[in-house]
Image (cartoon, rainbow, N blue to C red; front, top):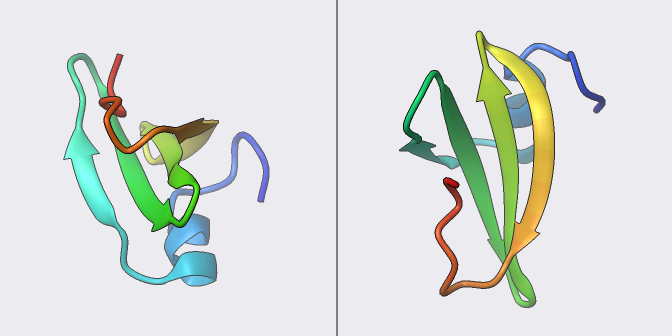
Length: 61
């Protein structure tokens, strides 16, 4: 997966993920792991970023 891919690519690889709507026009799909939370950021149904955050940190900024 890479920046600019369709958002459907995320769920085709990782299955159904929790969605968090963020202020503005983007959202995060999150995948919890033992070490933290992987966040896939989507705008206009395209992947525009990735993040790895601690469980206590909000995925939206």
